[in-house]
Image 1 (tube, rainbow, N blue to C red):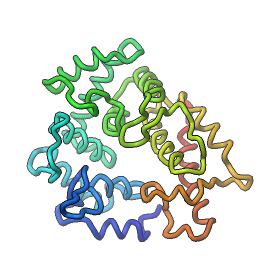
Image 2 (cartoon, rainbow, N blue to C red):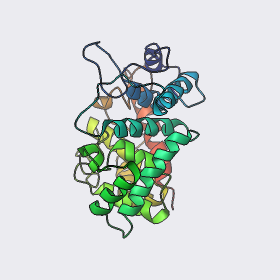
Image 3 (cartoon, rainbow, N blue to C red):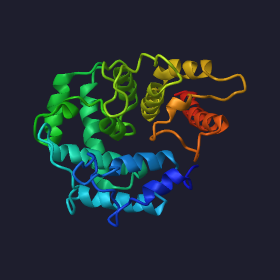
Image 4 (cartoon, rainbow, N blue to C red):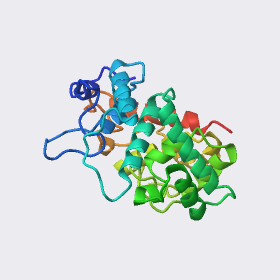
Length: 282
C-alpha cells in the first residue's frame, strides 16, 4: 500500500471540510481548481485508500448527501445530456467503488443492470431493447452520447456485480469489440493490444482491463491480455513500463522514480495484481 506517500498527502491537503475537492467531474477554470473530487478518489483508491480511511468516509458521506438531493455538486450543468441522470450515475458509481452499503447507489446499479440484462437477452447487444428498458427505468429516452451508449466507466463499473453469469460474458465480449473503448478510461478498441508496452497508452489500457475483471464470468475473454503481460516480463521476473508510464494517475506509487528499481517495483506490483485476477478461472 502507498497511503503514506507524498502523492496521497498532496491530495488530502486539498480536501474540503464537506468531504469534496470542489467540482465533482469538471475542473473549474474560473477558480483555478487543480483536482476534481472524482480525480482525487481515483488516485487515492489506487494508492490504497478504502472506506475504512476517514478521508474516504467523508467523501462517501458527501456523495451520499448529493445522491439523496440534500446537497448539489457545484459543477456547471451540462446541456448535452440528461444531467440529473448523469450526476446520479456518477455519484452511485464512485460510492460503490468504495462501499456496497448505500441503498440509493445500489438501486441505480440495479437499474443499469436491468437495462443491460434486457439489452443482451439474446446474446448480442440490442440498441432497441436498450432504449426501451432505459425509458422504463428512468422515465425518458436516453439523451446524450454518454447515456445512449453504456460503454463508459460509470455504467461498466456500476453493473459489474449485478448481472447474471451469461450476461457478464456477453457484456465483456461487446466491450472488447467496442470501436471507441471505454469512455473516460481508454478510448480505443480493447481487442487490440497497445503498440508498445512501454507507454502511457499501455498504462490506460491496463486500467480498462482492470475494470473488466470486475465481470468475473467474462474474464475468460481476457486470456490474450494475460499472455501479453507474460511476454513482457523481464528476465528477473519484474515488469517495467518505462519512465513515460508516469501519468500522475496510475503511476507513480512510490514517492520517487529517480531510481529505476522503484519504477520496476511499482509496475510489477500493479501487473501482478492484475495477473492474479486474469489467472482466475470462472
